[in-house]
Length: 338
Image (cartoon, rainbow, N blue to C red; front, side):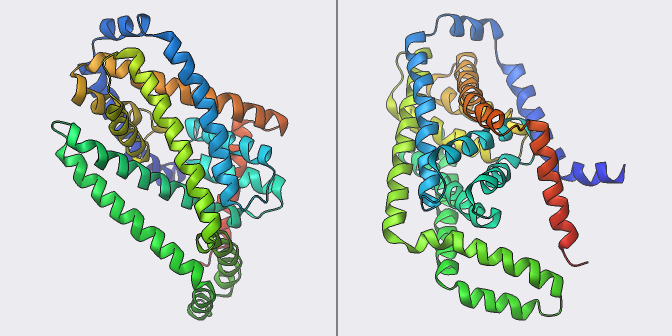
């Protein structure tokens, strides 16, 4: 019982946020109108968007492989990325991020702590793109002034975070020496933390390689461009009058919605963010929800196919990976000094 109460402090706030947003959506949406919007949507455009969603995953794997300095095989990276997104859709605490690092470490020869910082860098740059999209779309959005402040704040935090990671990567020896001096009284912490930090700083080293980082930014920019076109086709399938600038705002809002604590997969927060962003342009809450649910379905499809194939190739299951991740977390806690 005590363990349940302890764990509930982690998942309960996100669950409450998701439940509150789902309740709000159910209250404001006319499901007859939403169903009619789904029935009369342009399925040719939706089919094109499905193809692009798989292309997005393919390019996203190249983004990650670049950050990993091309050490793992591309197919291993692709399947691990798909597995991570699939895990995020169904497991709490965004375990998919840890899961894909864990699964890739088992087949690439790279350590978990060496892979993890590349995922952090990827996510930080994702937030930078999201903030840029929100800020770029603001002049065209009526009633979204507060979003501009969020965009500038997040953009500033992201830039500061990247600078700090770059400083750590450039001065990793100094940081390691400082850690060893401060932890000298706790040998177990020094042993565990020291080996982890060495691998972690090695992973951060991508930030100090100018040509490698430019390659990463190229693939990341291409990936976000594919996402923009894919989301534009989805929106256009339901709103024929849609303008490309709508997609900038919607995609930026979707990324931030996915970052809010919530149930697995951002249930409620993702739909709420996409719907709210579209309502500012259209005033149509029901059709906007149809767009959000379609985008949600695409997330399940591409991660389900690629991640599912990856799990089957490795003889893994979602529950099995979850148990392994929990064991990994518990083992790390057991090694921490009391």
